[in-house]
Image (cartoon, rainbow, N blue to C red; front, side, top):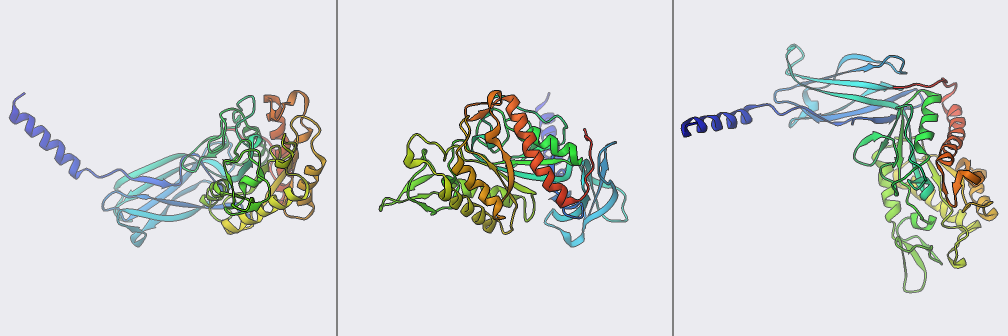
Length: 386
C-alpha cells in the first residue's frame, strides 16, 4: 500500500470521526431500575440524557411483556424545544405500577420530520416497592448460602447501577448469603410488582456506630473503627455509617422507597466485655436517635421496621427485645419479625443457614406484606414471572 493511499485512508477516517453524530444516551432511568409506586399506583420517572445534534424532540413509549402487571403507553413527547439544552434533555413521565417495561426512546429533528436521528432502548424498568435494608451481618451478606431471586422481579442498587438481586447484595458487607432475594420474591409474588433492594448492612456493627457524627455515648462498642474517644473519656460516632446510609436513601429522592428494614442488635447484646454491651433503655435511646436523625437528614418521615434481634443462637436477651418492641408500642417504628425465634438448623450461631435465610425472608415478607395491604388496599395475589 502506497504512502499516499495510507494518508488518504487516515484523512477519511478522521473526517468520518469529526462529522459522525454521537450516539444518544440515557443517564436516567437505568437498566433494572425500580421506581417506588405512589398511593395512586403511579411513579414519576425521571428521564435525562444526551441527544444527537439537531434533535429538538424526544419521544418515548413503553411496552409490557405478556402476563405482567402494568399499563403500556404509545409514543408521546417527553422533551422538546427549551427542554433540550447544550445537547442534553431532562424531563419526566408517569408510569403505572408494574413491569418489567421495555422503554424505547427516539430523537427527531422536529415534530414534523419523521426521520430518526437516534434512539435508545432499556429492556427492564419497573414501578413497584423499594426497600432499604440496614443493620449488621444478618442485614448484609453473611449467611451460609447465597440466595437468588426466583421470580426475576427483584433488583438491587449499589448507588451507581441496578442489577438482579442475586447474592451477594451490592452495597452491603460480606460475600455470602442474605434474606433479601427470598423476601423480595415473596413481595413481588404477592403484589405482582417489581421490588428494589437497597442493601446498606455492615457486619458486626453496634447501633452506636450508625449514629450521626458527633453523637456521644459513655462506652464504646466492641469494634472501634467507626467511633473515637474524646479527651474527657467519652466516646462519639465518626458518622461514617450514618452518612453512607442517608446518602443511599437520598439518592432515591423524597418518598423514593417504601420503608427501611432494620435488623441489628447482636453486636450490642451479650458482648464478652460487659462495659461494651448495650441493652435496654440505652439501646432504645440510640436507635430512636438514629431513626429521627435519618428522617431529618433525608427530609421526610420514612417508615422503619425494627426486628426483634438479640440472639447469638440462644433464646435472646429480654431487655434488648423489650427495647426494640417499645419502639413499636410508641409508634416510632413498625413491627418487624422475631429473628431470635429462628433456631436449630436455621442458624449457625449468629448467622443463618440457607434454610434459615429463606425462613427469615418469609418472616420479613409476612410483616411487610400485612402492612402494605393496609397501605394499598386489596392486593392481587399469585406469582408474576419474567
